[in-house]
Length: 192
Image 1 (cartoon, helix red, strand yellow):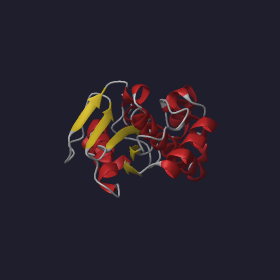
Image 2 (cartoon, rainbow, N blue to C red; image 1 turned 45 degrees about the vertical axis):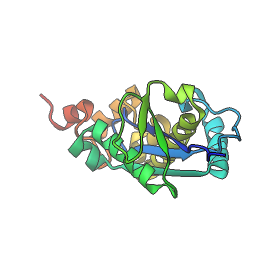
Image 3 (cartoon, rainbow, N blue to C red; image 1 turned 30 degrees about the vertical axis):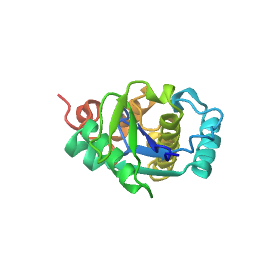
């Protein structure tokens, strides 16, 4: 009997925010054991994500979470930094997958067959699992950054360009974890 093909699901969290690193997760699940409730992390409450993240880390064959820093985002651009975080996550797995399924329309350039799947986090549990791990890890990092920079409210908006965040940016100026290559931050740094 042939061995099962190990599929690695990959997704990111934090491409759109004005602050903080971008995260990516890579997950290999046990094909015969489903985890009830896996879906796109954006469709879950914080509590549901936390519970499912714990289940994924306990039951996955392998998983890894990686990031690309604010400096890398500003130097490379957000797409290239995201792909870098994805490669780092896969390279950190304790075993090499036979194939990788990536949420979205870009492949990060792995040393195994890879497939970009638009809305993959809604279609495949293994990508949903990666989505959940990336999102919970990034949210935890933004809560930690809130402790260092409470004036920005990172614990509430997680660095996204909400009205409240933009008002804080105007009032306090950017801090070291703001992405200087993003237009709203550049606007504050270099007003016309």
